[in-house]
Image (tube, rainbow, N blue to C red):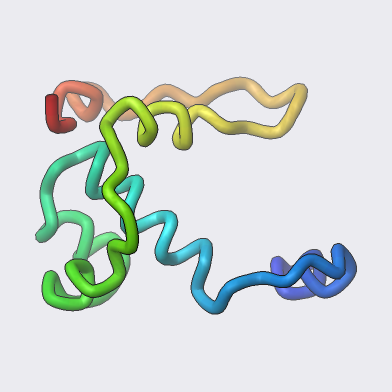
Length: 87
């Protein structure tokens, strides 16, 4: 089932590009690197700057990236990635 189908069935009003904007905000907070975030998101650094709607702390980013479905093992980040975030 696609994300669009899930959203349609949930009958929840979904903001346009909400998941993309969340990804950009939390990725930038986690890694502190606009170039890396833009590359991952598939757009320019200027677009990354326009997308960020609210400042996200590194602690918020860590909590966001730790969200997993119940019964799912948490995946480890590649070596060194946790040390790249802003402090």
